[in-house]
Image (cartoon, rainbow, N blue to C red; front, side, top):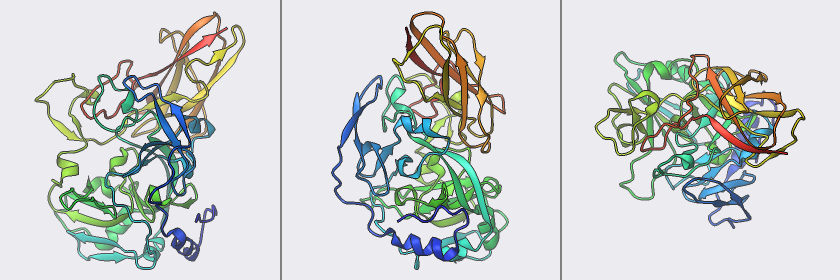
Length: 409
C-alpha cells in the first residue's frame, strides 16, 4: 500500500501505487488491545490502545467515528519526524471515503478566477515540486490538561506530528487559474461529508495573500511516502505555522472568494478570544473573537516521564523536542529547581523554521527526593512560553511551560 521512500518517485509510480489504496477504512475493527494511563487532571484516567486502523501502528484511541487517534507520547523521543503510521488523526465529519480512484480523481479550482481548472493527479505531479518540514498540530492539542475542563476531545500532548511534506505550492495552482482582481480569500474543501444533510460541510479559508505566499502547499507525500488514507490521501493542504484546522485533508476543491468566508467553520467554530494568548477568565463574556490562526512555541521533555528515577551526584541527560510555532526556534532552556533558575540546552539539527527540533542538556541532581524539571522555548520573534496556563472555552492553544516531577535517589 505504501509507495517507495525514494525521494524522487516517478509520476507513474506515485499514481500507480496510490491506486492500491482501496477499501482501507475497516468498518468494525477490534479496537482494544491494551490501555495507557493518561494522567489528565479531569480524566479519563486511561484510554485504549489500538492497532486496528489501516496503515496505522499503535495509537491511542480517542474516538472511532469520525476517527480521532492520538500519537503515543514515547514516539516523540525517537526523532523529530513523526512516523506516518503513528501520526495523529483528527477528522470532523464521519463519512470518509474508503477508497479514492486516482484515475478519475480531480482537484477543482473555481470561483473568482480567470480560468476554472479540473486537475488530475498527473497534472498536480507535473507542477514544480516543493518540500517543507512542518509541524501539524491540532488546535486542541493538550486540551485534557486545561482547568477548569472544557468540552471537546480530551487530548493529551499527542495531537501533533512533524513531517517533511512533498507536493506543489498552492501559489502555482492559483497562478494556473489566474486570480481576478478583488479576490479576498481562498476556500478549501475535502471529500469527507457529514452523516446528516444539515451537517455543515467542513470548509476552511485563508486570506489571498497568505494562500499565495509560496509556503502554503498541496502535499501528496509525507516523510517520503504517499499520504496515509487517514492523513488525507491523495492530497492535503499544508499551512506551515498554523493550526491543523486549516490543513484540509482529501482536498478536492479550491474556491477563490471575492468576499470573506462566513461558513460555519470560519464564522462560528474554531474561534479564539482576540486577547493576548487567547486568554480569558472562565465565565467571561463580551470579548471579541477571531478565527484561530498562528501556532505558539512549545517544548517537551521526551526521555523522562513523571516519577522517573535519577541518581544523585551523577550526570543525567535530559532531552526532548521543541518548536517555535509560526517561526523558528531561538532557545530552549531547562530548569531543575522548579523554575527558579534556567540553563541553556544544545539544539539539534535545524530542519526548517516550522519543524520540531531536538534539544538536550546534561545536569547533575545534587540532592535526593522529588525534583521538578521544567522546559521552556522562545521563538525567533521573541515569544516565550508562559509560566501560567492560558484559558479559553475552546481549550485552544495551550502552551504553558511543561513540568515533570522526577525522583532523585
